[in-house]
Length: 269
Length: 287
Image (cartoon, rainbow over all chains, first blue to last red; front, side, top):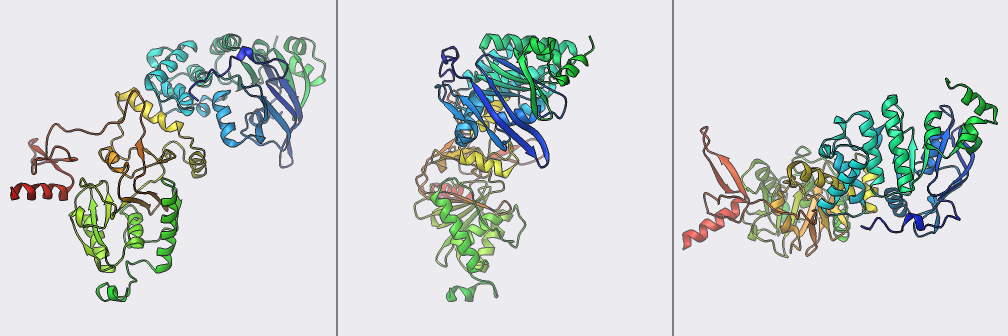
């Protein structure tokens, strides 16, 4: 359990997708949040999910991250040993272990993803302790490494995140997730609520980390600029359904569906 | 029982609680003993003293005590403090049992905040009064979630607190109610005893019962069960040490209370366990 680098990520066979979602449906009473959503995500790929507010983006992400049980559909994930497992058919301990090792979730509001009362170092080290790390010096060394990687001064390792700026909190949240070397990161509006210069820095950082670590990611955003910068492929959602998907440049430069055309046209040039 | 009734306060059942209630509590105790460290819910009753004053401990004691038992009650190690005196009188009146302030003479020891210095024997039971039974309550407010964490032995977040202490102060500053792993499976709050007493719980010969009245939980550590305090491999668990020894009996191996003796800064250290201190003085006087 202590050994997080169980299998080299690059050694994973590429024939099967890392994540395959098929026929996912989720209703809240009479309200349809997701209807028959299907897509696949390959290792190292960043998938953008765009659409207006209320189009079911966040519900989709909550289902995929197993925080919400879908009404129908399958979510299959390829484990480090190559086996493919359905998320809701796994036992709860196995699912929790997966969440803490192979998955990362970056929340829109860093307050949802951080423990604000404890230091930055403890925030980063939590996942390590959760999977059995019991050596203080090693946990701290790891935390310091990750703070450096997300460009937070190591001198602030013992400061609580509530003394951090919004951008720093968001970067801390990323470090906290990446410390366990996940293979899939789910991001819900990672740049929401940040000013543009901070957004740009965060996007640079995320792009760098994704390519450096070979991370696969799903980025939910309503900001087409973020999608263009980060995502390799783009999925457009409207009223709970995927209306268009394809390569990011293709979707944004040559939108086919009337809704995508509207979405692209509504950006100030 | 009819024998005891003559001596007890009129109109009350033996040891205050009715027989059905005692039966219910005994069932909870049996389950708790069967699953060391697991918190068993029980239907806690109103007792004639406020929650927080030991209602859980009293209910446990009331359901295990018999007419031939000899009861010792301590509060902060002392037999003569308010809480200890009233609980001892309560059982003297309602059960008519013999009481003692000597650890070695007691068959049941009810305690708040200490474990006696004199090692307990196999024929003794120690009952702890517990204010908050859930060790993870500070990090997770939802009971359903903490129970799930116990079920899955999901105890990683507890180490966040230890990490934080070492990061801020260079050592774990939790001095009482120091969390322990029981039998390698359940995380348990040992009630607010100083961490000085934690090693005494490990492989103890006596049965240890814990009652939380307000929170309606009973848990137990059976005799000879491993009780390990949480720590990091490079920051092992340690207990308090004093530079002084007891001003009355000279003990340097017991838990010492600091007593301020005047308003000019004079102070002295004395044993918190009054019975242990008395024993040592008696031995000295005999020499």
